[in-house]
Image (cartoon, rainbow, N blue to C red; front, side, top):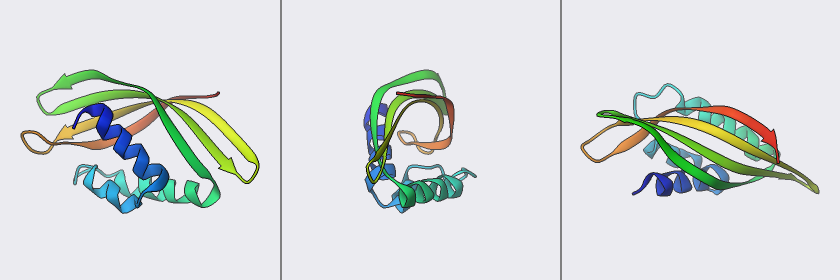
Length: 114
């Protein structure tokens, strides 16, 4: 699976899937998984969300760590009200096995209105 495919799958789960599936995408030692799931659960209770990936870029690679930056168009719909934002995010992925990488942490770098 490519990095682009990984994050397409990730954001599909975030928007429409069972958030417990994020367990398979996060490293078992990540202290952030629980709060990420709680955050997206709260968002989904308030609005319907659609995420379009504009770009995914490998920023740095080491033997056991990847740094990825993505740029997203995020649309939230609450009844008739639609909010649209652009978001730049940074993800740290760590190596689990010889060919498997999982998210350790993510941070939003910048959010602007679209």
